[in-house]
Image 1 (cartoon, one colour):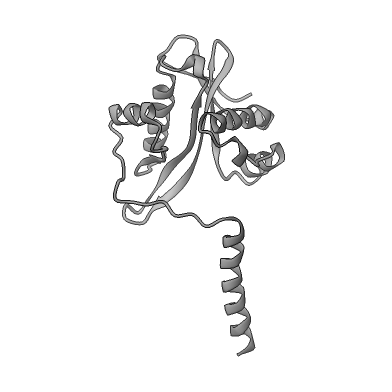
Image 2 (tube, rainbow, N blue to C red; image 1 turned 90 degrees about the horizontal axis):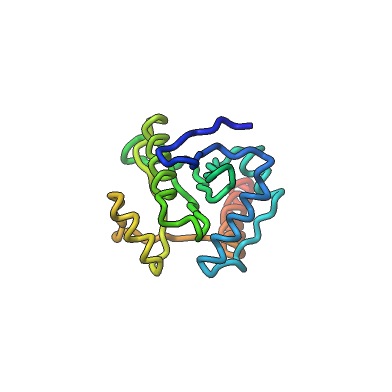
Length: 178
């Protein structure tokens, strides 16, 4: 069992997830996706999460528990800023069950992540937020978070990702012929 991390809120604790938490993590991911009206986009399986989180260790998960019951999670990983010359922490998902919102749990989780950023000698904590999610945007601004309005997120996935890879492969094959 992972170490329990006490917080400033009575009965609310944090802990790093373990492999037995994978079904819980996937259920939180699905709940978050449903809230974001993106449930059909969730294709992750328990096996995917076991491999990525616990075998390959590509990301970490914090579980928030209120009175020993899981009520939220944060999934994050390290990125790197060439400008700072330091790693950062990228928060992929933060989710608190609807009935537990407004109690400060999200703020506690974010403040714990800020502590990790400093302990791990990282340069910053970053995340994305959907444009329509006004309550979260206001919450993040109250914490001192600044929207990066000058940046646009780009993504290559699915068929476009395979097509892009083929561009490299065909170049690689041409180079080998020479």
